[in-house]
Image 1 (tube, rainbow, N blue to C red):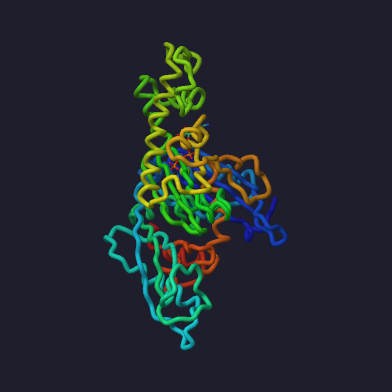
Image 2 (image 1 turned 90 degrees about the vertical axis):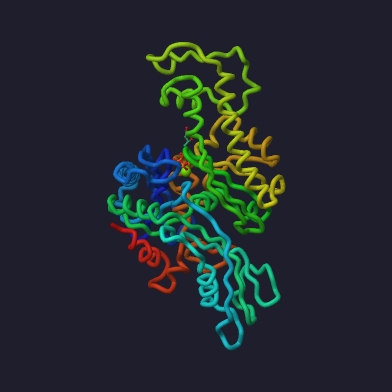
Length: 422
Ligand SMILES: Nc1ncnc2c1ncn2[C@@H]1O[C@H](COP(=O)(O)OP(=O)(O)OP(=O)(O)O)[C@@H](O)[C@H]1O
Ligand SMILES: [Mg+2]
C-alpha cells in the first residue's frame, strides 16, 4: 500500500535491552498522529545506554525498523533517535545580552542570541552540547519570566541547563543510523522524550518526577510549574536485577531473567518463606528448588537502591517528598510486581505507572510503559518546532547552536550531525 511519505514521523529508541521503532502518520485533518507501524528487536552492543559495538547495534536497529516497516507498508528514510546513557552530563549556564531592537521589545532573535551566549561554556575537546534548555529569563529587574517575547527591556538574561555528551557517543549513534540507511531528524535526550509521551500539563505544572527504569539505566526528569527543573541518568537498571539473581542463585542469565519476570516482586515481606520455585519448570537443564521469598529479597534490594538514588537526586534539588503529582514510573522495570508500592515507601510520594498517550491508530502495541521513550520521540516534533520557551523550556536539540549555521528545524540538526558521520 502506498502512503504519502511526507507525513510520516519515525521514532527509534536505542535501548540497552530493546530497540523500539514507531512509525506514525500525521494528516492535516487528524489532531493526533496515527500509529501505523511498531517494531521491536533485542539490542546487542549497548552497555548502560552507551554503544559499545556499532555493527551489533546496526543489525538490531535494522531488524527493529524492518518489522515496523512491514506492519506499516512504508519505507523508513529518516527518524528521531534518542540519546541517553551514562555518558550524558549536565551543567547550569547563564547567558546575558542587550536587547537588539531600538524600541527594546524582545524578539525571537534575542532569544536565540541569549541562548547562544549561555552555550559558551568550557567543554573538553571530546564533548558536545546536545540540548540547551532555557529554564527562566530575567528582563532587567523582572525575574522568573517564562516567555519574554514581546516584553520591553534593555538587558535579557537566561538560566539554562546544558546537556552534554561524549562526541564518540554521538558519533556512534550517527554511524549506526548511517549504516542502517536512516537519516537522523533529531536526537532527543531520553528522559525528555519519555516525559513528552506520558506526562500531562497538569502533572508538570503541579510538580512530578518521571522515572524510567530501563535495562541498563534509570533516568529521572523532574518538572515543576511546567518546566524541567532537573534531569539525571543513573547507571543502574532492571538488567542489574537479572545479574544479581544469576549470581545469587547460581543460574544462567536466561534462567535468572525468566525467574525475575515470572516470579519476581519488589516487596519480599508478602511472600511466604516456604514458597519454592522448581527450576526444572523454567529450564530442563536446571535442577533444585529456590525460595521465592529470597528472589524477592534480591529484587527488592536492587529496586531500593534505584529509588534511593532517585531520592538522592530529589534531595539535591530540595524536592524530596514535595512533588504533589508524585512519581510516574516507565520503562520495562516499571512492570515489576510491586515496583510502585516500593517506590511509594522509599520516595514518600504518590506513585503510578505511566502509559504513552496522544495517539490514534494501532494503540494496543504501545500501551506499555516500556514504549514511553519511543512514543515521545515521534511526538517530539510538535514541540521542537515551537519557538523558544513557549512550553516553558526550549530544547529543540542543539538548534540554537546551529541557528548560526543553516536551515530551519530538523535541517539544522542534520547539518550539525553531518560532522559525526563516517
Ligand atoms: N513484566 C516485567 N516485569 C519486570 N521487569 C520487566 C518486565 N518487562 C521487562 N522488564 C525488564 O525491563 C528491562 C528492560 O526495560 P526497557 O525495555 O525499558 O530497557 P531499555 O530501554 O532497552 O534500556 P535502557 O533504557 O536502560 O537503555 C529488562 O531488565 C527487563 O527484564
Ligand atoms: Mg530505555
